Image (cartoon, rainbow, N blue to C red):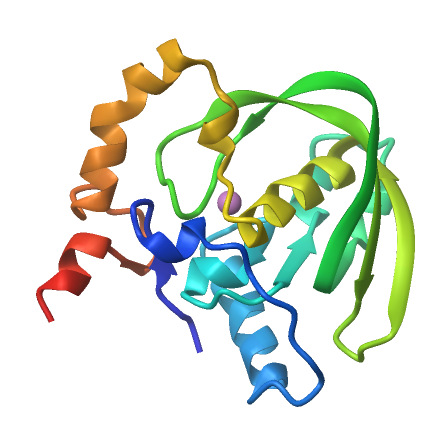
Length: 192
Ligand code: NI
């Protein structure tokens, strides 16, 4: 089932998400629904707060990036579910990458992040992993990880750039920006 994606301005996108355990209700279905939602919106990652749940769950499928770079076959097969993830270390050099977010449609900005991460998490079967990532994979994971920490990529842009997009952000919150996937807008929610 395709779930509506929570738009910028909803407080759930600002919560620090909590750990879950194996018994989280309908977890398998939730994961399947989130993948379906992500693919429908042509995203490369999706985090639980973006479907209204403040739990430490996100997924990544980097395969769309494989088209851009034939030297990176590891992207094609990179599909992962991250549960109860914690970034243990970030290192390397800061580099800019043009980021977007399904919760913030029609805005893209260059964001600087460190190139390397070490992350621990459990997968959808609650098997524990501790892994190192760099490049695009680290970048996608850092973006999704920020979601479960209540952070958004626009927090990392300059105050000037932020001022330039302020009206557009307001329009997103009010439901005036309509991408071709289903969204849930904070303003619309209050009317219920
Ligand atoms: Ni995002």
